[in-house]
Image (cartoon, rainbow, N blue to C red; front, top):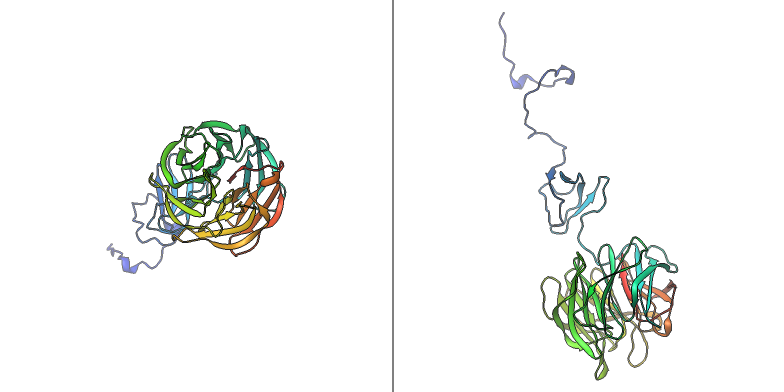
Length: 376
């Protein structure tokens, strides 16, 4: 009996029920509708730019975590964890989405940590205590902890507290120079304390790591000796605005900038609208803000300057009243101030999207001035 060899052109379709037995290896080159995936012993990072683009699947063969690329922006990719684990891989942002924290403060030095919501207006709640009392301190934020550095009358302590639990904070190191009234900045990996008073104004920029408990190192200088200034943070640079030089006693209007990527001195990039010190600093993703202050009387002005270019600040609104000696915190949509002169307990906020005045949204648990701010 003769047979005819079946040619590929004669195969139109093949029912799955007819496929039995051991199948030979088949190339998947012509498969469609299958999302690309990677198996790796490590997690992706924000600079992992897969050729498959949006929707690429990444499986960590070590931890079992699984991620999907949900924002394909070269160098700033977002990998969302779709397994049972926690923690997405996304570009660092200084702003918080959950809560603001007001730590320490004076009249006299205090150890209280207050927490207030970014998602709804209301009074703060007691989040626990610092390991010791702090006043006129600089605040910093990592992704998991708030930091507070420097203590009234030349203390050099660096403290740390957890955002997600209200346990007592820890002593994690020391500044290179004991001082108060410094400005705080934060990169994705380090906290910074710039300037301050000891007992006269200083220009030191200190840096300490978030990865471990360690002392700070001196990495540069601000352009002038300065204290009681506001601190701001972009993703790449730290900023210092305004301030009060204690010898001789005089207000400042400078905006200084220094790089997070390399150690070095700051440069002067512009001026705020009103010469003053004792301000609060806030940061959106695109702008730095300097709020309130004193010179020679209390101020209510909200200044804004851009991170994208070196320019002078502009006046974009007013606080609910004249205020100084307060601290600033930053959400993704609003800047916040808490505490202040005359042992104020006020929490107020202003929006980034439009030039507008601040509104009173609640109170901290203990009125005080010179606290430190962090955000989560």
